[in-house]
Image (cartoon, rainbow, N blue to C red):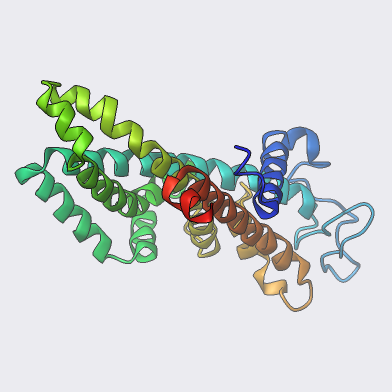
Length: 280
């Protein structure tokens, strides 16, 4: 842990992520207004959104709603999808990768050929197709994202499982008469935990970006439920006259993705003994 937070970038990323998580978890307390509340003074006399001010910190949107409140509630939606979708993808990918790498044979080859087949489809295109088939909602979007993100995790876990099963300490344990189940859960899976943790952190950035993309295309989380992606989608026509409506939610998406990537890199260096040895 000390090595992880000795890097200033990792510390700043952790602080930003923690701050957003606190705001998202306490959206009902931190957001000054309801995300769906329309204000009579939230638009100019010409009906245009208001710029950032003392009352409306991030300005107002095209319907006169407080953008700051919508961004906070949107963080809750985007992070829930990011965590749930990434968790499901991590679970599926780990199960497929460990099973294929440890069992081998026909079952292992079949699982990895299916994984390779899924990797042939562009993730965004497959997500668009799945989102178009099912009625878009928060949980459907999370499931769709999980269905297109598990393949990379499965491939990485499979490679590491195969490498571990061929190590000398596994052969020694096997020669002592340990069962396959004991070897798997006592010696193989614990060595995969650092990889799973790192991929779990990095994957949240990917899922948040993919959710924002789907919502921006209109097939993700549907209004009036706010998410960072559909806030941009709703206000994109005001990009030139009211750029804060697009820039602020867009900047939060980029900042969150960068923060999770920095945390993932720091975790990888802290948990990987080979990288620690090189730096030493």
